[in-house]
Length: 327
Image (tube, rainbow, N blue to C red; front, side, top):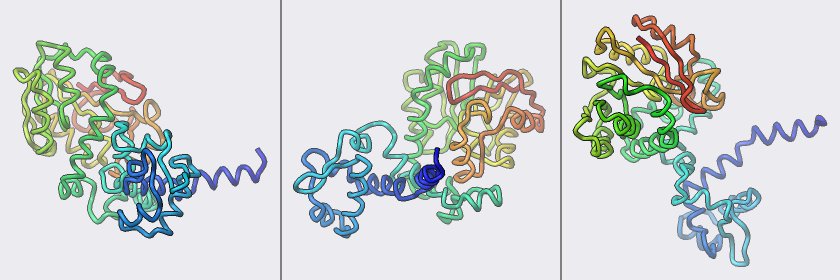
């Protein structure tokens, strides 16, 4: 590739205009507003309290991207752009909307230099408090985060359930189990298995609804995984938990699991593994948002050994997640 083409490609990769234009369009609800026959710039600007000239600049770029198209009276959303509508049910709205958990979290990337320099999350530096405190202070962020996590896991749940012998246990504690999607599926597949989900309220309350179909075999406790966990289960499941935390907090979570674990019990970690089932882009997201990372197998071994845990098997469950079994 000629040098000038290399430069143009790198500029395109590095440019912030397009990703921010998409995020602002979703935040303003433009794909929804411009469906059907579309509308004029002046009309939409008046409805939303926007600068007509500035909105025109945004819509021009969205037209270049194929998100909207020009019509005689203004702009309308294209079939391609309809993927950004709220009823598209594909997770993009949460990922891009600047006032929902996913889109707000992505803004931490402007602090990537800080994160690379210090090894710390950039979220608090940008937003004034860390991700979890932000969720606790804004219920709509917490709700959108729960929805995002449920969606991320939903398509992979069947493979996770089928890819491991969950039936060897009699009781599983799902630590930080969210709305209970995974635990409900595991219990449904193994009628003799009992489960106990631990998460903060109101997420724990919502999980009770998910677990109603297996209510006789499922309990929920509203609590933090930094507090003592229900003791004596055969297995303690951490699905997409440890990568959200730096080593100090990951050790605290594992310590609570080991504290509750009987001698023959297992700690089961399900999440992407660095160099195996983790993307480099997502790795940077874990760093800038949470101060965490997608740990490699040897890093998990080191984490576990500090608590007397020995890593046994590592099972590839899906294209994104592995299961690490500690005894």
